[in-house]
Amino acid sequence: MLKIYTTNYCPYCKKAKELFTSLSLPFEEIDITENALARDEASAKAGGWLTVPMIFRNEEFLGGFDDVYKLHLEGKLK
Image (cartoon, rainbow, N blue to C red):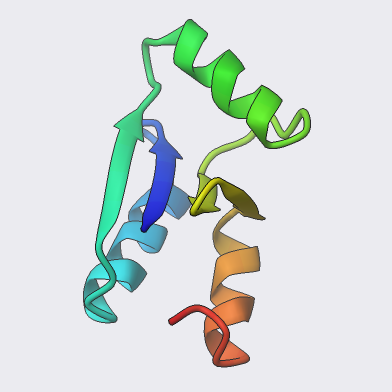
């Protein structure tokens, strides 16, 4: 299962969600726009990553939109 930490103003968050939806990949979205604690927890799990989206698969940090899109193009996302 994919988990994506987002903010409500991030265009790359929107692109990632659109990609997952177009591929029929289920995901859980955690909006951290106004939740500093959740942002800090996600950042710690991501090794200090500070930008959104922060995308995980089964607790493995995949990166942001560009990283996940690259996995998709390589056939490694599904």
